Image (tube, rainbow, N blue to C red; front, side):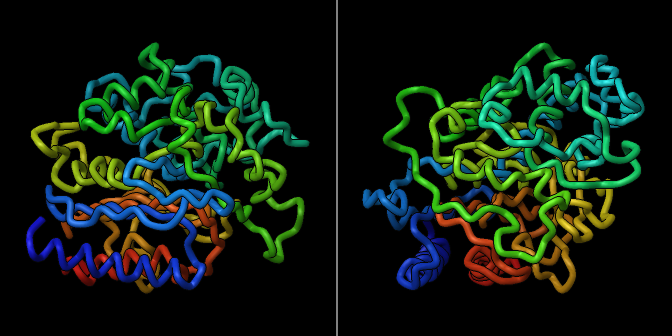
Length: 378
């Protein structure tokens, strides 16, 4: 690392140590690239609330909806190959998706949470996560909560089967194979980048201290948030059947340095270390705004693209910063990975102490703000 990058590393490590000492983190990794250079690679804290082993650089963190950004990149790669058209109806690749008024929904609308299929089955059962084929069938047979394409509501879990069904219909390949073969293997991060944990990695898995989304908030029990993210679902994310399942909306297990490298490629025109994931002409499609309507699940106007979320929130309060051209995806409880092409910056934060922080507050945004300050990318 250069002197400048060493200064960034030490400054972020100081903040990480402060957060650990105050009990606001348990275990954490932070990965940052500036341009094509890794300037932060930190692993600190312990593997879980009841696992005192120190976090290592290759420890794997369940990063929840950070996974959606990985799945979205897989779709954009396939679009570059001519296998998917964003504005084509989903049914052109997946005819079985058509019932109940879904035949006109486009791929771009589906990936921006406009399908109206956000609700999980009730009452929740663990097999609702672990049975891939059943999830695909639920999307095919699902009755939208609104006319598809006319509103948006965060498909917290069901996004995984929607994107998976599109990819499989368009290519004949399972999305977990596309992610591995088109992203992880070319970048040399395949041992730190999983959507569905294989056998033999149990010792590298961190354990979450879980804080369910919406917990403690004055939200009615029948609200769309709890339909999309049922409270009984959350405790199962530390269990091996959940970790081993393919859920490209929410159970990706990554290292921060692997996520940061993926986004570094996108911050640098689609290429890093001589590996081109996509040409630079594909990046604007990842920055295409699809909707910024009030989200029926998250209860706020969330700007959404084709699988990605954006920076540029009001007053620049979000962790991705003030620029709308920044894109990536946060995960429940505080994990995040994104790039800021204008600042030539990519950031990934993996944590195992979930927190429901107020907008503009919390350990993750403190770290992101400090990263921008130290790199000059504010």
